[in-house]
Length: 280
Image (cartoon, rainbow, N blue to C red; front, side, top):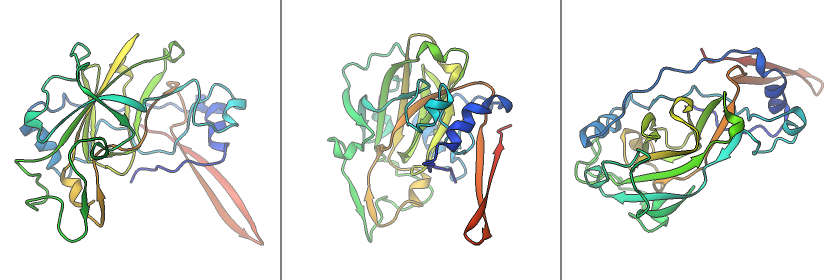
């Protein structure tokens, strides 16, 4: 289970600035080339053990700041964060067979595509239709963990951005707070990963895929995957990048994760214990 809670105190932010140089962190191995054909996409979507690929391990959010006074404000924004919320180029298809085969490389022209807002769901922006799950299933045929062969709506998103010069020499992390259901991510044509945990965050190290100047992120989102069966309960079922997307930049040596415990000691007092951990 990924952690998604933000701590209101500035303690974590300050600790990340003050002692971030004490802990060495390594990045995971690069992901595979990623899918291209409809059969390859479905191999991911229909595999209940393929919940993610190329992701960073779950951790508490430790936002990077320029200095301790800035960290003390506990703001969501700093010189080392870049929001990717806003208008994205978008195209919709009822099945990936009908979706553009070429879209991730920077040279592909997407200027004629529609635009949608991120965060947002495509059913509220003129595409597909919402389904309210009460008694019947939204997926037909109901054949878990497989997805329907004739209809599995897919939205393809593309956005360009520029990395600040002050980020040079650091590690760049791309974070999705929530996308439903299964989705694949490319940066400048390089496949960086996959996630099927629609209601929880996912994070990817995209440092090696970035370059100076304009960069392109492309995301292909499917309405149904094997995980959709687990999310098939009494609610409105919607699709797309429905929570924020952002990049942040961290030093190569840093605190990766931390745990705070407050052990009750009686008489209304408690002992605060702060520990750090690293991703190897």
